Length: 325
Image (tube, rainbow, N blue to C red; front, side):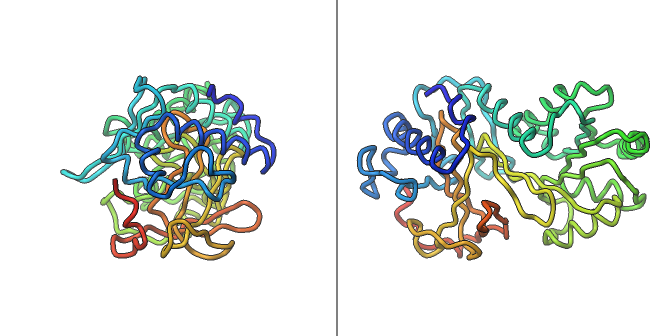
């Protein structure tokens, strides 16, 4: 599959057609996924609707090579992890698919990246190799073509001054940052911004006490002087992202979909507004696996939006004894 057709999806029916095509492709060309599907007696022939597709547990990316087709990676994205812990590896054969996915998704929700100055405050990601987030933001910085776009590591005073100056001029700004770094930046010097999108990528990364989303956003709104805090929902194992424009309610681009699985039965799904495990369909992930059962808890709503409520503890994962190869 060349992949370009997924970016032309305009309806639920078109999504379903493409999802089934991708499923059959990955069943036939991904040995790990085919073996996993066989445990549920699912084949390329007897799966006729999206709800019947098995979702691969995201933990498999830590122990298996999840590749559909030949292993010929031009990039290998890795997850962050504590010392000694296993990290996920995402082998990417076609980086152009990733670039098209995040470029079109951003434009879908926010307009052209050239209209923004992109300021990035991602120290925990910038300090290691293999971050898919850094790859995406670096591309956004370059595509913005703004002279002041760039990464900031530890020079928070310079970033604060630059942000204040640009915002006062009326320049549209995207400040994307990890939560603890955004808090560090404005802890002693609150701002009042009018033309800036503050987008947090989540996580204290062990640098600060974890906060629930509402508390974090309340602090950031007050200290940056903005009405809402935006968020990005992505992960190493995916090539697409969801975005929230406030209140922690996310939307996905047309080639990405969220389903909520029952925490007791991984093959059953929850209705809207009921909490369960987040399953992601990312059709851009053609060369890997597009059907992933994450370790996040969440709920969906009737307008194709979703909310992330937290993560499973090991004790919370039930009904998954069939999910180990």
